[in-house]
Length: 250
Image (tube, rainbow, N blue to C red; front, top):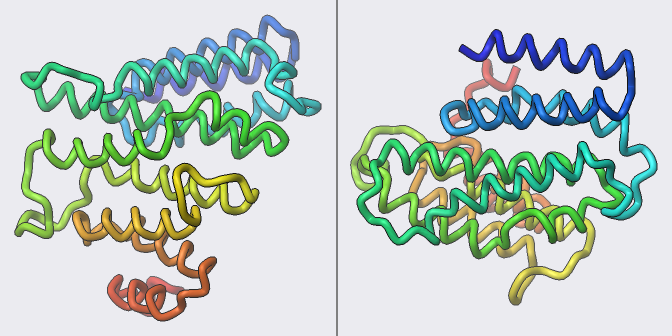
């Protein structure tokens, strides 16, 4: 049950917000890590649970941060923990091919959660966001490799091959990769490898959609990328494929 742990997290934040001391902020950071360690491997909504508390922590202690050295220990510790979480659960680095599928799925969720925390903090701290991504997140190539591996080691038949109309466990990795590429494009940062960051994002999302054609999040993300690229015909085609009814628009 997540409820009691969320209650403890809320109480820790209320105390930190009242005291606004270094010790209370460190306690909130520790509680966030404890919650992530417990529910990151099993709950896809784990980052949604903790995001508001991470944002509140950053609003309180990082108002004047312009470099990574300006980040207080409670935030830098959170970033280091997130990096350790996704690094330790990189499946492409594993040489054991006999790992139980349930454990692989848990490792995949930890990997995704760790990156979500890094990206969440980077998006909140605009002045040091690119530095955070460069230091604490894996390269796009690693995300792509992890996604492709998830297609092979997780059980089940993909929808394109006649499986059920469900999303695939690794779809979130491609969403994170496309968000990172859009972030780089928006801030005119150099892309990894060659080519335009937005074109790379579009290509990755198209490949993901091919394997998971019933995931609306992939299509919505692709529509956003194509809108930035001014490729209206493909954006319209994806929108029509989603089959949105008028009542859903309302």
